[in-house]
Length: 228
View 1 (cartoon, one colour):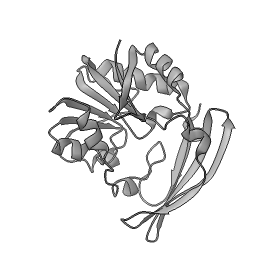
View 2 (cartoon, rainbow, N blue to C red):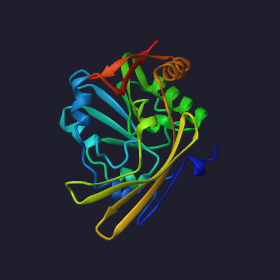
View 3 (tube, rainbow, N blue to C red):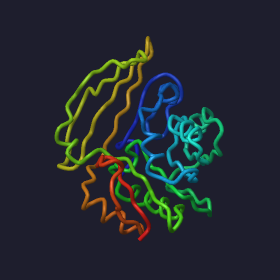
View 4 (cartoon, one colour):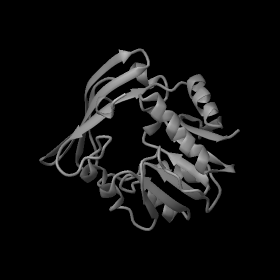
């Protein structure tokens, strides 16, 4: 499946291959994600963060006492990361030849509609997680795909976030366009994502040598997986 059909973006400044606006992502701050991860893993655990972007989560994990290796295919994104080892690479081609206590794959990257790409992501996770470690994946809860509707909201830090278009080309696929506005700057991001219900995700994990072991804090959007 061609990447252009899966995601693309517009707006000022650099745009990454998956359609994300670097200048916009560099503005974002965490919303409790680092603390949620920290509570679910050992103190001082080593973390491989796949798709780290501009360090929104990286910097807080460092502050919580973890050693983080931040991976992203965009050098413009990684230029914003401070204090962590950075690796400029796509997730699917990463080969560090070392393992980590935790492999982190956030921001719904796992929901790519490209089945082969998703399986490659999971293989990378398995190749880089220690045998006694864990992989933490962020997905939308499966029911989100049935209930999501266009919306608009203003944030406390002066951003306006809109989901302007939604379609469902297949029962388990969602196509949507996000629009982000800050002052006179405007970015759009189109994505096509696949619903990952528990049975489907467990089968995909199994092919990569992983298995689901629960959810973080009972939130089904945060999946913990371990080597089989």
